[in-house]
Length: 112
Image (cartoon, rainbow, N blue to C red; front, side, top):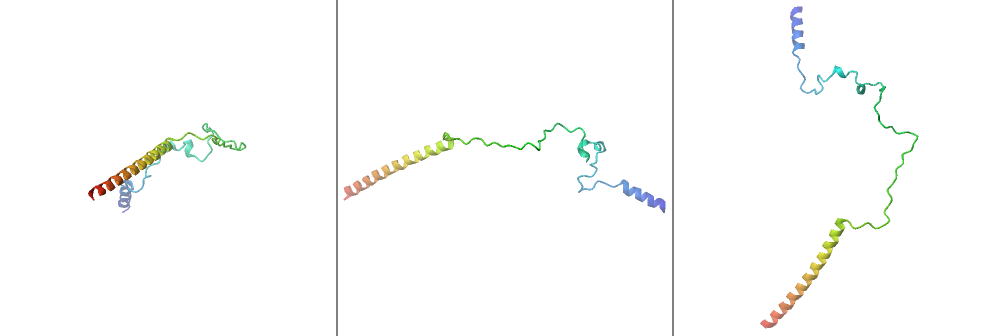
């Protein structure tokens, strides 16, 4: 019986396949065991990274507020020209309305 038991154990362990829901199965790379980024020890040769000096305060400067009125933006110029065109159209519609009223009254007078 021990031979059958050993054979069945060997069969089970040799046919073990990759689990379908484990994305990290067989992801260990023994070549990266001594990689400096994967250790908890401090790196003896750190890369050249600029470090902030804790004694120097960080000074942020605001850009100066513009004193002069800035030139109109493209959107403002477009809106202004649109408003002028709308005012001209309104005036033209008023003129046409008054002419239609005059013609309407003249037509009524000629029918009577």
